Amino acid sequence: MGVQLDGYTVNASGAVISTLNPNSTFQAENYIVSSSPSILTGININSFVGANTFYSAGYTGTNATMLNIEAGHIWSGHESLGHTIQNNNAASGALNEADRHATWVGAAMGGRLGGSSPAGFQQGIAHGATLRSSAIATKWLGSAYAGSFDDTIESSLDHMASVLGQANVANSSFGFTDSSSSSGFAWAYDAITKNNPRTTWVFAAGNSGPSGNTVGAPASGYNGISVGATGPGNAYTTVASFSSRGPQNYFDPVNGIIAGVRAPVDILAPGQTLTLAFYGGQTGGNGIALPGSTLVEGTNLYSGGVAGTSFAAPIVAGGATLLNDASISLGMGQNSRESRVIKAVLMNSADKLAGWTNNPTVISGASVTTQGVDFVQGAGQMNLTKAYTQYIGGGQDVAGSGGGAIGAVGWDFGGFGNSLANNDYPMTTLLLGGTNLTATLAWFRDRTYVPGSFVASDDSFANLDLQLWDSAFTTMFASSQGLYDSNEHLSLTIPATGSYGIRVSRKNNMFGALAGIDYGLAWSATAIPEPSYMLTLGTAALLLTSLRHRRGYAAS
Image (tube, rainbow, N blue to C red):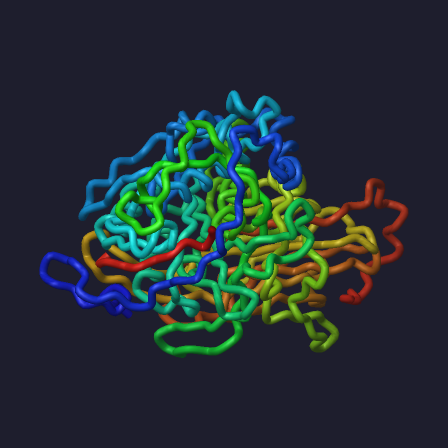
């Protein structure tokens, strides 16, 4: 199904005549500014999310490139961001102005040690990476730091399509109202992501919580990583009240709107009391012509108390960059840098916070979820220590694309042809009773956008299931079989020592013709160090306990 993008009225030159669905919800600014970050109140987020595990192994992002795409540029005049490379975007009136919001985001992704921060507080998660910046705004709207801007198809979508492949990881911390991902713009974001499968694109979920059905596009799409925020500051034990969440509406061109069925958040990261580089110049969202604009003088200032999913997202983008750096350094191969693999590993290694549930039920003795992940938390909060182990310390990329024998920890990039089938992964080690098994599956929704065409299409959506069986695949114990998301997730306790296997099953399509589909799969369980004495126990049943487009930031 092809549509003129997002229902906009377009003239012959592609300029916008009317705009729909502006997003005007933001997390209110509540920050302080200082020339010395040591007096600010935030903790070292890098250590909290486990990035030190990568640093200790020599990976800070050095061999990887990350890109921030939003209204304005990261300011390269700050002591921590002088390495930023700005992509000049001359398309359709793009302003290419330095911006406070982009500077905060860039600092979270890859800010480096500055003279005013001798303890390295707060460096970006992937501070060794090449950091690029793209700006898409053609006009800033409202008062200073209202958070809204206009862009055009040429300055945004076509520009993104041309630059996304420059980076291993991209981040975008803005959004617009489209909870069901039913607009042509949302389709185009998914299409551009699909066309650049070795670039992991991370999006901020938005700050319209605590109600459900509040994740806006592009985070409400399927092919990137949608990030929610945790708090309170310095603890990060719960989902921040402002963080957008599900249950979310689903849409496709055949079945229409189905209300309250999606889990749109993929993962969480800290989003309150953050310490980030500050830009006080009168450009971008603080442009001199905007009411309330104020110049804040000082070259190397820092903000404390920054909050919003806009800043949780670049923390996850930094984590994805560390995985890419390790992959390149170790020569792990291109499949390890597939965005579906990176997404599966990050989700599978996340920590579930109190109250996490995917609402399983018991059907014919098996635990079945049609939800996959939690409506609010997604898979949980990013844990890079666990991600390091799952990505590097286990099995890597089973030979072929149709399954195969696996160990207790690892990942695979697999796929199906244009027919219904099962890909089986029998485990070669026994699993210890009482330990936790997690498995995560991620794939793309098939959407199309051709740069310069002004038309996007929603073509098909494969329905895959993720299951746990005995190793002979005669008895199924658990199944994640949602219809409405592009990931499946299992999290369960193994009650008795035995031999198990993971199955990826292609059941059908939600709509559209069958076509080849690839996926990323990650899993983690604890193997028995010396299993021979346990062989007599056998296997027990499991008990499963712009066109011009008005947008707004998903952050302060």
